[in-house]
Image (cartoon, rainbow, N blue to C red):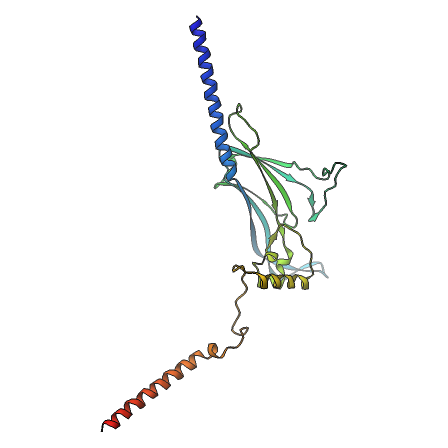
Amino acid sequence: MKKVFLLLFVLSLNISVVSAETCAEQLARAKAAAEKVKVSHEAIEKRFMAKKYNEETHEFTDETYEAVDRSLRIDVFNITPDIFIVRKERLNYEDGIATAPEEDENGVPTNFDEFGNQLIITYKDVKDGKFSFSTDKIMSYKDYTFDIYPDNDKSCDLTKLKTISYRQPRYNTYSELPICQEYPTVELCKTFISYDFELNEKDFTEEVLKRVKNSSDSKIVTKKATLDEREPNFLRDNWLYLTIGGVVLIGGISIYVIISKKRSSL
């Protein structure tokens, strides 16, 4: 009888060890997966023809123009079966106005719900290797946190592995200015930005030009100058005539030399 109890005790120890090893393996896979999770955004533009609105008559006219419907798609990449994610949305930005957080006596913000619109993302929600959600509220920022947890057996450790903080950018109205049409890759001219600045059009234009002048970034591009916009250059603008003239001149000299040699041999 003692041998039976001893055998059962040993087996229970083995089961515990196997279970512990399984949890450790699951946790290791979850930690590796959590490190690979990335969050980014993509701007979506849909162009369509819309009727112009007459402010005086408060009616739409028969004239049309090309309008743009803009939105943002937020993508969460590299979600695997080993993890799940809790997305939380900070709600301290409303109606396009960034409101400063109100704080209590301990300096803790009180006028936003950090855990608003909580969403749990699991592997079954993944499509084409990522989880995506969209928003058409592009005139203000939106802050998110993505808490990553191991998605394993309930008896294993479910401690949070990592948090990714992400700010959804807002539409940059300065990108519509003429100077940004010329230098679209300058940081200040990007369509969506994640920081604030306030300049009038003149100061903004000067700032963009200053950055272009001082930048060593070869990625800064501008529109190609047309023939009418380029500075005059005699050699470049008259290369065809100069080439033809050179050929004629060399040919004439060659003929003259040949004739002179024939005459001298007579």
